[in-house]
Image (cartoon, rainbow, N blue to C red; front, top):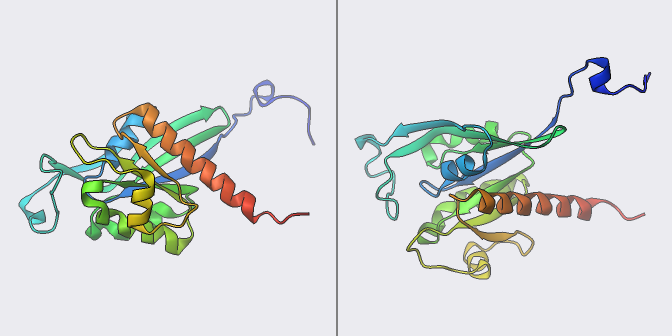
Length: 200
């Protein structure tokens, strides 16, 4: 029975709704950087130093200065209001860690696939993963300094994306740019769900 009193008046603690978003993409594309840029808390990171064991496996083209890699996940949080929080899970980029993806993807609202135009093929596995599982996603092109710029339509064509999949340009180092990417994903998810609601 509803007493008419607020949770604060009754002393009950309100538990906010949590939305889960994955940040995916190839090795060295900027997933850890994006999670760190938008998270309101110090992100949990599982970064390990690259070793000789990865020689011949980890392609460092375009990211020659990279010295660490994510081996499990990155985790960050954004509080929208007292009733809603967004949890960000950055996935590992290398094939040998993909066994973690099913666990990370469980219950996800959607995903951001980060792309680097210098290594565009690296994001194909992420795109394929989310397409096969019916998980809504957007492609965010991380505009690295010195890299040739391509517009969203060119990237869409190169990745053979469905027309409704948003493609946005971003700077993974920028909090504001990261927020624009997340808003694009939420709007895409909402549009997909609206399309599935039968008309009366």
